Image 1 (cartoon, rainbow, N blue to C red):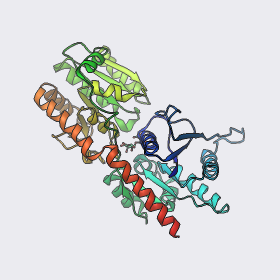
Image 2: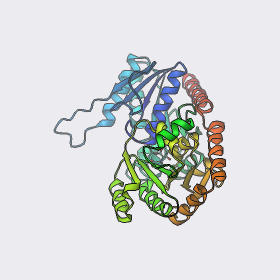
Image 3: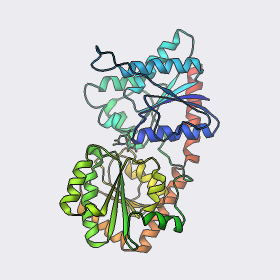
Image 4: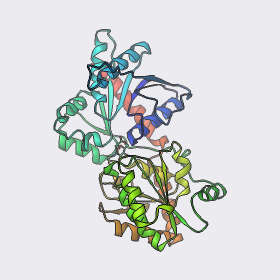
Length: 382
Ligand code: GMT
């Protein structure tokens, strides 16, 4: 198949999923065309079977707000016509599904059919889509899609409940390549850990875009408590609005030397397996991709019981779940786990098994391929 993919190409889980999906589909023999405003950050630009088309947005002084969605629709229709795309797959409803709708309409005149699939990732429904000014157009974009998928059962139910959309929503969960995200040999792991921690110290990690919904500051709160009992370090990976508050809190607790602010990193698969524990104290996660990536690397997660997270983390088996903001309880669980090698090892193994059995690319990519086929068959029958 020839598939166009649009996503937010900078840092964020939906862009990661879209890019990894493109990479996996290309490896399976499909021709993939990314249509975005900059090259998705996990692409090198040299992958076989993957083409990148930049969306130029003109900055004419009259436009106080450059019309990106229109520029995107134009580029989508051009790429679809020039490269004879079979379908478009857009990640995140706003504004991508609307641009895809316009592109599809633009091609009618050329007698080219261009069905599009929208994948809902979370904040497009739970935050942005529920902002009243965006709700009607988000619902329109979803209802006009030729296929709609959601990354968890939670998100499907939330969308149906709050948007009352007419069309069916297929759940295709997020996934991880268990060969790329995998444990390291002892020798490599110890060498990597020595860059951040002294022998005998534990390593905790938090990875996010530091938006308020991720509660990165809670990760610092939890770490401050853990570090009092268990000599440890915290790797903070990513950047965003709450980074400075996290830095301020680290200073206030006097633990700034024990925290490594690593900023945005492209090869997180090399960092995650160095850790003993992941902290994901988010206010909301429709899935919680970073926890899955950590689990695949044999790193259990202490997370919040929100959104789709319980579909991934089984409390007490492959991680722990707590109410939002329960930093004392999270810290107690972390201390208990980091002080009990046997329990930690059991959770590490359980996490890797969950990733392999339920969320590996080998299981999920064929679900997308089958879904595309159904959408194409349906569109051809009209
Ligand atoms: O979490 C965000 O800040 C936004 C969003 C994104 O586009 O990165 O994340 C959502 O999509 C991820 C990938 O499918 C999910 O793993 C996240 O749980 C989801 N975030 C929320 O629902 C808050």
